[in-house]
Length: 406
Image (cartoon, rainbow, N blue to C red; front, side):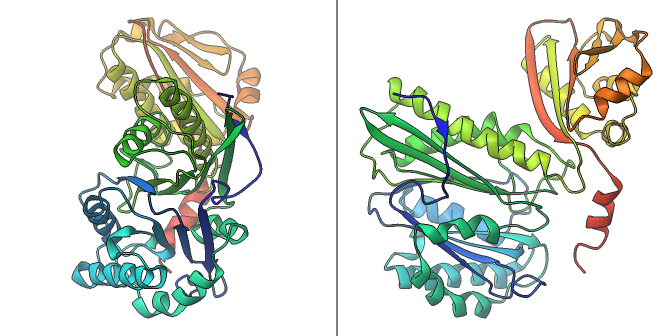
């Protein structure tokens, strides 16, 4: 089994998949791609999904959970729109989701339960069913490997670039592909997944095994990012396995570790793109905590620092205000001795044993001027560690979100 390597391609690089996208008029800007369809031709396709932990869950989340259960993980299509979240839309919103899935299933010769849905955009606005059903025949007719590239564009909202990644490996001279796309720039603080991400593979994997692999990869990727501390109503990560490569993945043997390595690499690449593209962000920030007494303490400290508006604005202004970092660690709920904490900005020591380390101010600002920054904390309490990926907080974040509805 070879190592996974990055290659050119799209969501349909994994054999057995086709995709397409159209401008359905759901977004405010006319002509923008906002409706996409992904379909798998293999009858034995496996599917798995992870969804928001927000109690206020959007209609497509509710329906997709139901369809995955009803089909026993044998879903073969995805219908996704941007520009409208179809969240907080009551019974009418759920009915729109059901009718959309039913219409797509009929055109694809599938059962309605084999169609998964996802939406992203404004919360609380009715989603017009006619805009979707009118374009479905065109979408189905346009399905192809080449047109699948447009799906990554159709799911964008405030994203500044499409987020895609394709990996390739070989088993016994047979190629195997993993492909993924994601969207997200704001309302990013997943406790399960992140806004929207869709993953495909042509490996042969059962639904239960695929679900377990997906959860393991998400825990160390999408669950490690935050932009603004808000968990969306629509967070969704879905994965499909067509089996077209003929290479099986099973628990308890080398195939499991090999595939999980590739799936984790794929998810981490997409997650870092989301953190880098945080609304208004100019810098990608890695928060690394080591020396914690237990893993939960390391995680609490890393998340508190990554979510602190004061820390994030200091980074935006290249202000080496390490006191804000230590302060955030202190209110995280983790147990540690503040008189033992060391803090580094990249490799520059700015705090030793909980007090100023006598660093050069100009050197610290130079470190913070970088496009990628690592904040390193050593609590000197134990051996546990954690990492969170985030971004700086600029004036542009307010500009974008102050008028998002209008």
